[in-house]
Length: 121
Length: 109
Image 1 (cartoon, helix red, strand yellow):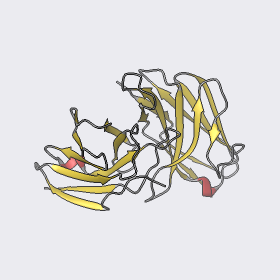
Image 2 (tube, each protein chain N blue to C red; image 1 turned 90 degrees about the vertical axis):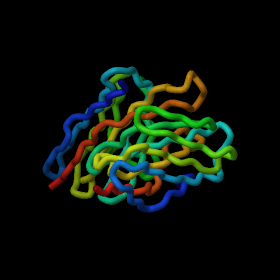
Image 3 (cartoon, rainbow over the protein chains, first blue to last red; image 1 turned 90 degrees about the horizontal axis):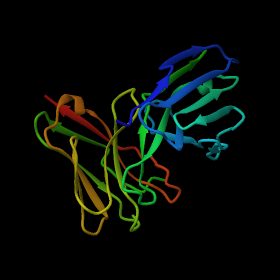
Image 4 (tube, helix red, strand yellow; image 1 turned 120 degrees about the vertical axis):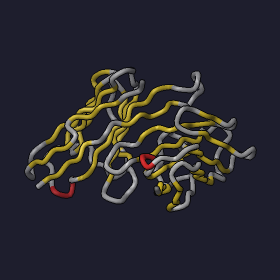
């Protein structure tokens, strides 16, 4: 259980184009999904938190107009990198949150997708 | 900033138990400790989490000290496939995971 998928697994695009990444929770409903970015040899950095049916909350320094997040259902969130540039090349990872400890506040566990490697030429 | 400190790297012989320590001296009473691992070029994999009691599942055991200021993740019989970066995380007040550098665990044949 608790499987999260991402599509595509890797993408190469030209500078200036837009890229959409899908994140799906396959066997559970996730009220909250998260988007992370990871540069080589660095740890994960949270980009935004997305709740179904509402606007995403972006971390400081993350441009919301550049990284568009849509969370239209309890099983699907999408991240669109608009007008991508080489500096946007990175490993993008999503996670979906599921409550796992009998309803105790703050015990949602995040399950991660396999990641999407983006290379902008 | 991450609320945990872990050794940068550790080695363990295949078949032996791997014990990964984590310090979280500023943990609050209702904060859980989570462990994830990340194998190269993959998304993080959930391992286990706990509050104050020791926990065990099919992957690992989590031992939390009585004062909750530190914990140890135990992989009972390490295999080569357990080579990964292991992250110990105490969630912040916004229930977000703040990722530190983790411990790079290398399992040697």
